[in-house]
Image 1 (cartoon, rainbow, N blue to C red):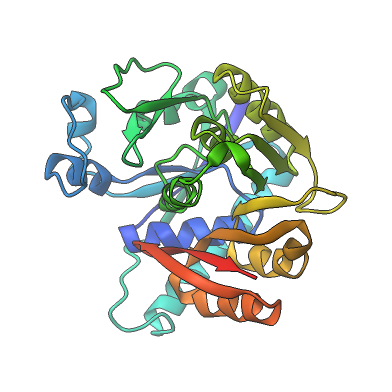
Image 2 (cartoon, rainbow, N blue to C red):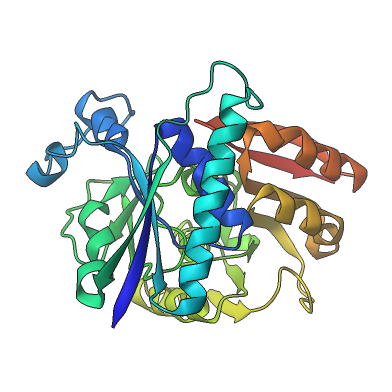
Length: 324
């Protein structure tokens, strides 16, 4: 089977904006190649050091960041690719007009579409998915990589398929760190509701952190299947349930922590209803929010009766913790 790879070359700032644009268009399965991630490890900018560096990754240090999405090669999807090219050109035009500020540089924003075979693309993204230590104790490891955990480390095994969530993206790592923080006291007595669970990474992490009851909700049928497989892979079936659904529609459960790694517009849509699914004194962790849209989400939270407890930032993204 033939597929279309739609690839956009950009700066790191541009990659963040492109990712948000794709998410706004309902495209969550993206493949990001960012040599700056490798530079952070090489220069030990992160708090965690590594004992090995893959030679193939070192070779990418001089390459240009890019983001790719894949579609089956059909007339309908060819038209969709053309629409995406126009959207990329409009993004570049708005940047040149200074609408994002005069100090912003999204890079070339050069878009290309390439016809590839199934075998060429479906596993290509795996090349840059390596074990990553996300928090003080949590390591996310792809199923095809070997990793020997150090004392005190908990390993979360993951095969995300085409579902969103590997732990490497800022929005996911922010959620994982905040989950660890707010589950620290008596996790076995707490429950978590994961809205838009994707690969299941947050739901599984909550269980591995000791959470007694976790419910993951996901609208995409393939992602529900992938999340279920990952739950079984990590042996947390007794505490994690994955269910197909649209946000919290039809959900009758209340949780101590509600986590939603979505996008700003969906967080705003979710906020008025989420309080009906929180226990007294519960915590709402929302992520997938570009810094420029932080105020929009905070206004929605305030309008629904929430008080913002803290805001965590990483690059162009932020996560907001709120309580009723």
